[in-house]
Length: 92
Image (cartoon, rainbow, N blue to C red):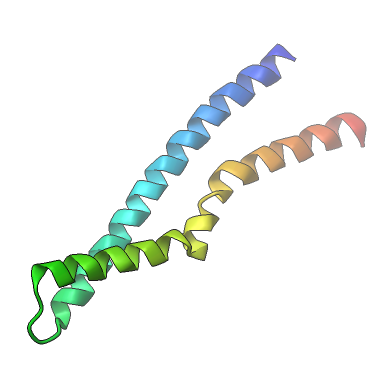
């Protein structure tokens, strides 16, 4: 049982680090894509404030996107797999 708890603690730490790393990377890639999209075709009379508003609007749309929610798979799926394996090995 102690070995399982140790596994759980270390895997939780690893999953948290992996999740935050992927989240930061994914957000930076999305922000860069929005910046390139604006720079490729800015509207007439565009100001720096308009550019910032465009990028912030795109990032707020990203916050509710499926891609962001799929990152939770990094945390949830390994725990489900380990739990399933433990159940199958011990009780099935």
